[in-house]
Length: 287
Image (cartoon, rainbow, N blue to C red):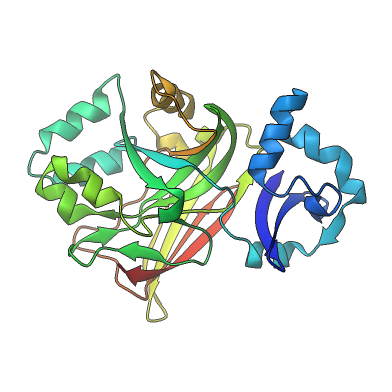
């Protein structure tokens, strides 16, 4: 199933999409008005989120699948977003190319312990069709399409699409500047939904397009099979000796990198698609 967050007349609505259509789960269970409420109910009843939702679909108001996809917002009121670095060879090559200390990224790519870093808070994170930001004090800004693992109290409960927008010039100047390159206003987008029926997250096709003035200036594709680490391994390191919040997302690494010298501009448009999850599309603004 795929869960979307909608707003109707100021009220939060949890919509669920199945093979047979889309439904307003909140219409039959008003307390199930967010994905967070769903997973908390699932824990109390010792069920999966889908097992909680399934019995109520027959009585739920039907929705237009197209309307749900076109009007959905940030799919989860996430407490924090973390991210993994250098999990794809292309990312390792790009980091070495930008950095004043390139050897450190080779060591991370081959090391037992992954690179994990804090990425975003709820207030810095945007949803579908909301604007992502690029820093005006950086002359090299890029989108980073990533598979996101959705966690409830440290346990994976679904997957989403993420964009880890970053300043490569700031990070490349000095690795200690990583937080400034990664964490700022509108630095992250998530959506369009949370998919709970992904059997193998390591076999998903992924693509990204960037448009500017009506023309495509970047178009690339890959597969999560190219990851050198597994989602399970990354989650295990994120939760080690770390009291994680109820709702978190762990982005699993950059899979597609525009050619050196390309930089996002205000009014660009970034579209990321991951197989069996959906399309995350965002305009760009300067922050």
